[in-house]
Amino acid sequence: MKPMKLKNVIQTLEQIAPLTLAEDWDNVGLLINPLRSKTIKKVLLTIDLTEAVADEAIAGKTDLIMTYHPILFRPANRLTADNAYDRTVMKLIQKNIAVYSPHTALDAVIGGVNDWLADGVGEGEVSVLQPLANSDAGQGRLVELKKPMQLKTLTGRIKKYLGLKNVRIASPAEETPISTVALCAGAGMGAFKGVQADCYLTGEMSHHNTLAATLSGSHVILCEHTNTERGYLPTFGKLLSKALGSGVEVGVSVIDADPIRIG
Image (spheres, rainbow, N blue to C red):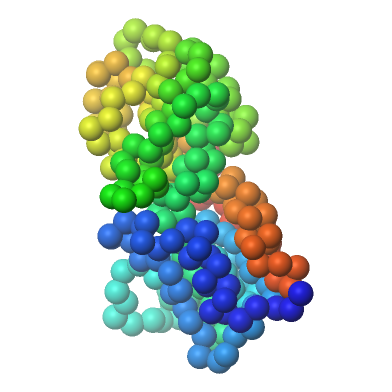
């Protein structure tokens, strides 16, 4: 098959994760639309579009970067070479590389990031925490486990699924078996609003929200923000490759990584 026009690739991305599913505060879609007409032969997937990832894309002759987190999020008054964020944007524009972000649309859609994360919890019934009107999709997921499990067992499953050696854990005074897990990739507190579960699984949560959860009798498992997202990229890459056909090469960044390390 032949390479695809940019507009056709964008249409495919929007079919996989409709932008109408994104949160109102989010900045999704085609964020950098090159001045020169663009034919897409190579797509690079990343969670964060850092300057290092941009350099990787340039070296690999990438035509389109699909960055999960939007690189353009807040209004900019000026772009300067002294700022790494600004340099990244300027490099991509200079090299005529398109940039697209699905972010919370990819979280909400059925089969997206949150459903992938739910697959790592264990066998059970999965439902949407915050359903969108007139849609099966929405933010967050609730897993009602087929068989209750101890925190140690659940933690072991999550670490293995996400490829992590360590996670952060908070527990109530009395550790009880876990039957329900509320989860949301990234920073999930907004999706947990009004939801009671035996365990909350997300990337990050504030001290006070974590404390409140344990005082109400719930466990908390925190994996760091992008560790709950990055593992979905290979799955998304296969889905996108199938949709685009053999004329477009889809790869996952080897530079992209969580900025937090355990010292």
